[in-house]
Image (cartoon, rainbow, N blue to C red; front, side, top):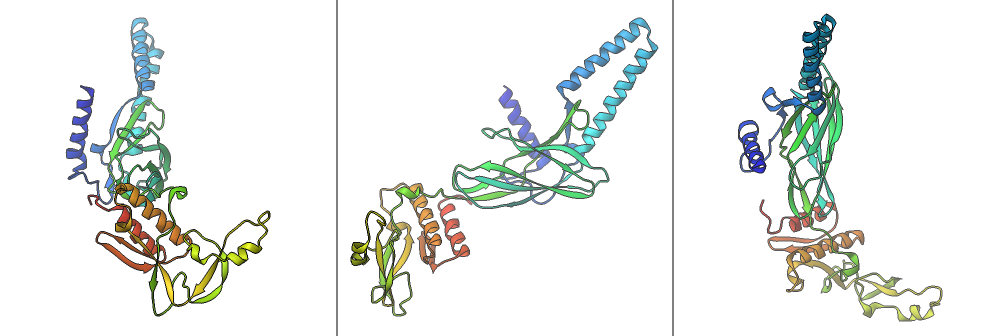
Length: 335
């Protein structure tokens, strides 16, 4: 029964106040008008009301003039507190900010901007996400007169794709705490969630494939010997410098050394969805490709990318990385 009433109340809010359609949030700047701010007595406020009734009855019973004066004085304070509590929240302007992309399992950070265009400051406003399964964590903020305050709310992500910001509740009990005013806001903000990278311990080496090129540019070739370097994951075992390895003192420096070449045939790095094992689960494939992208960027190895209709030539850098990760995040996901 209670769940049904809550659902009807949320539906009424969506239709009457938010005017939401197709599950989308409120775009642009939102004004908290009088119709959007609700106010009810808090528990201390109810106790205060009972005390006023008792004082009034005692004053009537014993004909106490000072009792009547005290009762009406306290009642006047409650009325003023009602006005100040409502004013502390009403006519705020709300604007969603940016939400940076994150990996699944990390916290998506949603920026929120509260603008106060009135001459009085707003104090002790609590903001937090509300919804089933969401932690009841709120953050407090003040908004000075004729200024804008900024706040960031965190939401733990569980899956890749678009993560829309849940509904936000704003509430306040300023100044005396006798009443509680609150409002709701559904910001039109979403964060892109990349697949969770596969654990590095279980990820195989980068898929380096030998390809003949005339210009000799690439990660490594095998025509002109250029020296030796420390072995890196993904290097061919055929290029191990066995003579240099044999000269090392295994008790002091037990490490592998590989030969480095330039020109001629080079190793081309291609992160291709079709090249992954057929029996792997879809999310496991995307997680492995995510790990390979991060590893290639860390090692400064240009890489090509192929996933369905998303085909990118070998490149390197933040823009190329974002494009590849975006394709992984939105693969077979509803827009």
